[in-house]
Image (cartoon, rainbow, N blue to C red; front, side, top):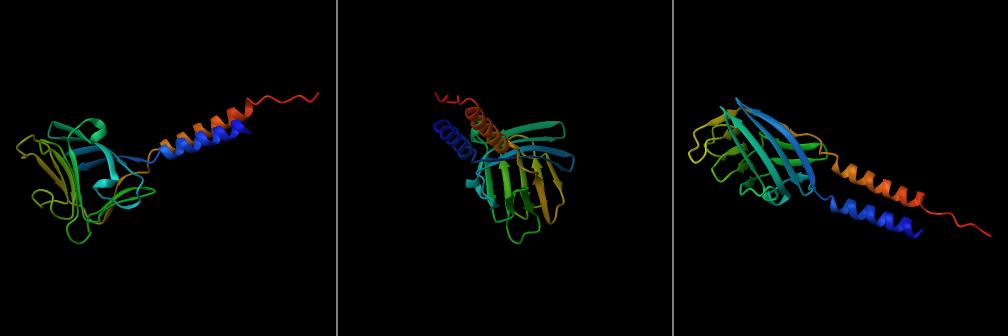
Length: 184
């Protein structure tokens, strides 16, 4: 019984440490593409900057590529979020391009390379979704018209499920390795 309890405690500890959700997605903005990974703190509903734990964004536009990420990647880029249009559900990440007022999410590197989702207010306010790849002088923009609620990334990756299965396997292994006590 003691081994079972230890195995159960280990499983719970592993599950508790999985308090981050990873979303992976890809977008096309005009001729540009964005491949991204966004890690949240498991918050569901409206997301703010404090809910984004880490990110990696790879932007390709007109033969140029920019890669930037959050604190865990060792990069010095930032994320700016304003408004209530950026949300997370159990099925994915969403941005409401038709939300009223000023709403934006901008992933921006030190060199002003960026991926911006907006209802209004990123850079030049001319497009709902913008990509800028050009270094210190941002002249290489691409834009795409957007409206309504759009899913940015699909179902979170199954890391939590994998950890839970490993925990259950550990408990099962601990129970199986118990030696029967012979009465005698």
